[in-house]
Length: 363
Image 1 (tube, rainbow, N blue to C red):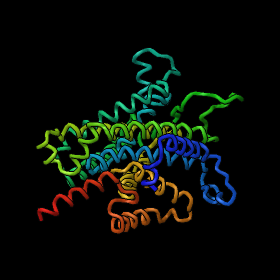
Image 2: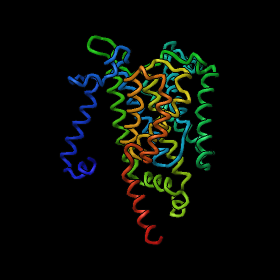
Image 3: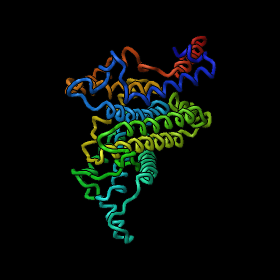
Image 4: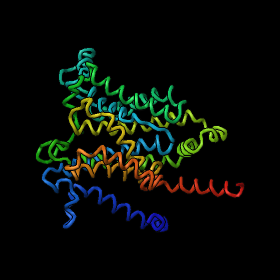
């Protein structure tokens, strides 16, 4: 199908892409006769269909961000949930009127008692904080490789969670409540981004996701993206060719962290509160599983991995107790049957094939 798609004229590709995007925006209203069983609310104990789509959207953003680190730069990050948590807590600390940080700012700068940072301003704050945290984590650790780097990043994720649980300014185990959402009202005067109708939340998350896909795709095919691929395949050879590996790996960490923070903002805004229990080690492992199962280095692959690992447990809630087992089996079986993931990167496959053909004559 990908080969056939590649041969289509440009105008046909645009029409097909527009139709697909339109279908994605239609999904919350999905009601095709005979296919309604696909909705998560098709069973009595199922969750809201629009809420599931929203969760899928932010997890796809997370998977794309982690793919920059794992799939493109070849760095194993097991603590990505830490960036997710920093983004979520950022909008809570600066946007919630109940936050101790906001209370301190009111007292320090003599502001009104109902003052808090607006939701729109919280987004660049969260992105900046997560990028800074990515640089702080990467600066001393990116000289490590393989298992050593994985252990350090795993510790980073746990440090963020434990710090949030034991710190007074983060609300401790109770977390932070009254986190704001995007402004806007419906025609009847009710909030556009409320707690009952989740469709606007999904449409906003989908719009952010499409923007992220466009930007990351452009970045992947830029000089920075080619440097990441060179480092992933052979860092020593890339260094000999003039690629400064440390700088580009630091860029990968920072950009991946920014996407994790952005998804954390959307998550916390929709929830209305955050607490340390939302950012467990199990969630971090699931993020890595999305990339590994879907296909490292391929944006479509990691998106499919995120969709499957989010949708299936929600649709089959009766099997939710076996979710860790199912993820574990998938991580064992899929790498054996399809080592490059469900949808492998064609670019990397061509590179490996060319390398084998170059080595074969000399052998």
